[in-house]
Length: 308
Ligand code: CP
Ligand code: NVA
Image (cartoon, rainbow, N blue to C red; front, side, top):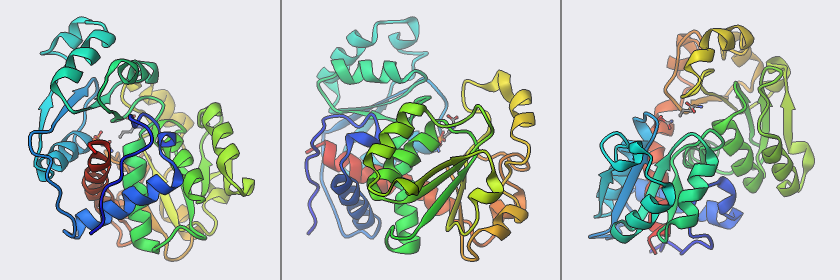
């Protein structure tokens, strides 16, 4: 039976905290968990969840993943704990390390997440920051692997804002050698350090393309992926961003230029008629709900490695 390996890094703050082999190992474990071929008992292990932003999928999939592993979770709502009153992260992290075996944090500033990682003696997981969403990327590549069986010759085109979700797709894509194309409006390109890092990792530098033209980016693509135009914390930019992102909707016109068997992914939540049309969202090529389900299996796999 496949066994979860201990990871080289204690924390999972970024897609780059994993090596290529570790990503592949987690995807294989996830597939085994999904197909009920793996049963691991982490009785008495506790996952602490700190969510400074809203969440449906990440929160629930972590709770279910931990339950299926035989452990339990504590939802540390910042408004009812001392976190919301401004207790220093370094104190919260040191205290929670005494109670919990692993901590997942969703917050705004990536530096705050790194502060948790620095002071916690137990593994810290990035459950989304403004910079990265690496758990999402694991589920995304699990979904892509299920569809195409391997990553060779797969072209993944992301259309939308070059922030957290796009950054993690680029980094995880570079580890897996997947061709990643990002199409975003001018000024909304992915983080430049992320791009530089990915180019360092890619053996073939032509596999990463950043463009402002969605029409050329989708040509022959096997996977079309999008995310909300206004992320959490950007609610006051909604009207402005809707204007800037005009032309970046995944619709039947863009899909017709992709590979004829292309699948559509979306990390969710989705806003119909904004980043994706209802018709495309609901179409038979959509694997969006498999992708959401895969959050559970990927995180179960991740937890089983981090808790070794
Ligand atoms: N995709 C995702 O992270 O969803 P939630 O915000 O609901 O967790
Ligand atoms: N970019 C989005 C992702 C939501 C899962 C946000 O940060 O709100």
